[in-house]
Image (tube, rainbow, N blue to C red; front, top):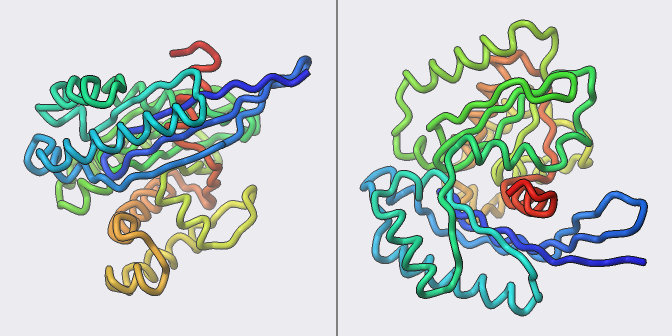
Length: 296
């Protein structure tokens, strides 16, 4: 006998907002299956407001309210029985973040929780990572967002340490990541990975997923440091317009993909990783699983 539950997760990031609707298939004696039913991404770059001016603009507040009303209707149509909405870096730092949350609750009837980098990293790590982690190996999990990047080190199938840094793609685009932050990241990665002979990267985030898709590789195959380096040079050689017209990138992806690639490359260099695996996971997947297993 099969039972299907419908859960939804809303991820309000610094570069875009996502609604993931998932079917959770329950069958006696088997592990539950999490299948993506629908994924809607809305390119509202909140980080541009939050990191440069310190508040979410009137225009973007209106766009957010409209997007949330749409998300609410979509969840209704899909007959979603439970949802959770989390906002990350941009909403954390906007001084009117709490007001925006209250307004969305009033106008769109969606309750949003603003979470810190630590909780964000924990939620992403609570996705299906244990299926990927070979117990005898060491992995550095890197999730690049618009406002921050989360690093989590796993060894022997266990989480060793995790840290969030204010180095995200939207911040980098606006020249808001100083050398001190880069030095801190380099020091943190080198210090925490030096005792391990070999480290493999696991990448998460919209940009690495796009890079992986462009590579045409099979899902379980990794991207090499050499490939990432040549892609970085190639993307840099094209103008913003060419990245849109020739590579078919979305306008809100065509600029952030370069700073994102730089973060992954540096993480590989500083940890000595030769390969990066790109499973299809993100914050929204983590939210659905954490809800189902009663972690949130």
